[in-house]
Length: 438
Length: 199
Ligand SMILES: [Zn+2]
Ligand SMILES: [Zn+2]
Ligand SMILES: [Zn+2]
Ligand SMILES: [Zn+2]
Image 1 (cartoon, chains in turn yellow, green):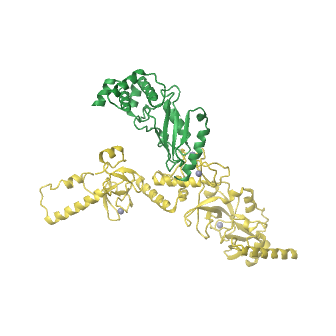
Image 2 (tube, chains in turn orange, yellow; image 1 turned 90 degrees about the horizontal axis):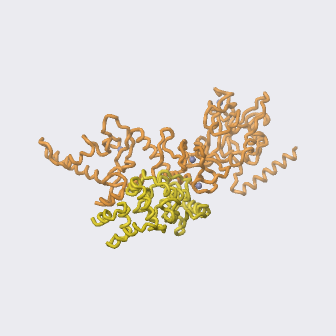
Image 3 (cartoon, chains in turn cyan, green; image 1 turned 45 degrees about the vertical axis):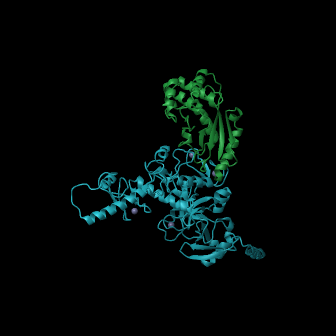
């Protein structure tokens, strides 16, 4: 026994040397150990160790024997024979160390046994939207007590589907945290962390449509068998590779042809055009580049305002969303611009579109005016007219667009709609024929 | 062009080449250049239609956003059909517009066009003149469409009468395509066609 231990420790230190020379592998893994009475300590573990060795190191630090403790990670007690590098324990993860209760509980199937039973890909391919990394990343599933948020909880049953994980109060667990208001029996709360960066508290958003392509389904768009894939929730479960999904989202964003659904927000359906196939978790659009995603968020907010009966401030560079009063056409934006709710031109009294004729009609009415004020008023009118003729709202997305040069063929920089400056409708051959420029 | 579009077209091209419709000479597809952005399609006129015996050439342009947006397809061969412009060859077919889905292919498009040739939809017309004739005088429509097939798509011609009328207008110095369009639009009434051409 002594000789065996000696050989083992010799092997470990040798292995350590090997790792040291190989820069690709960390020599040790720094993790936090939390006990159920709130003690927290940081330890460096060798990824080649088994859990039994961990207990031998950690136990004494908590004033306990190695045989008296159990170690919990992600809702499961870890088996003594489990090797650390075989489980998804990242740098600065937290594992929980709690004393065994001596009532002789039935031994749980350990987390790594469960993982071993699954195909390899299934284990590693949870995908998440990470706000820290800006994009779609690999995630890891974690579980904590819904009551006290402690990770010192073991699950009563394994989650078998996304609904088990996404819906609260479906799976119960045994919370080991001392002083938990719900414990020892409490609801388990599942959550995800991004695998790409070390963080104690960033929670990543799971993306349930992204799957490992275990069935080797070819992509709907490019026909390649790729991994991972996005599987839509239509009856055919249409499948598209991640790259094509990104292109699809980017193309529809440029066309501004996402769909606004009251239930799910600004989203897309299956590219095969299936009924009831809306993406219900908009974070899947994190597939877009960061600049595109920001545009997506802006369009979504604007669409939400427009659908809710609001208007967008037409002043170039502003575009703030405003919900005007029902009975008043005068809208004052916080940027200072005051405009008409109906025609989005500068605010006016009377019918929309009449202002031109009124202003150009010149002197009307027989009342006397202060000459100085009249001159000023003309100046104002003149400058307003310049603004009016040099910008008009895009007929599709209403963004004010400036015209430079004499061509009437307008291309909206925001929604790419091609429209006619004169007709303020879609650009047609008729427009080309009758007023292409002027 | 983005990779995905080109890659998809490559595969679809192979799919059409191997398909049984090609074996039966009903459809054909040819690449123009090697960029996979432009193709030439050919459809045989479906049997028991005025287009039987003709061969119709299509211009197919692949947008960069393919397959999320439809290919742009146009008849190069002149055709007399309510859903196809007799002037530009532009096609009114839902799957080439808003009913397009990324799961469709060039083969689907060619077969749908062949089906459209066999059963026109005059209530959703591209060419109002043709649609009007189709609705008001279907026999006249059939004769006209058959004449166009012989004139432009290499179909057999039995209609000496129409040919004579076209020749009369050519003799008056009218270019042959214009003569054909005018006569077709006026149900082959030579007098009215002449009137319109010289007014
Ligand atoms: Zn608890
Ligand atoms: Zn793909
Ligand atoms: Zn679908
Ligand atoms: Zn504003």
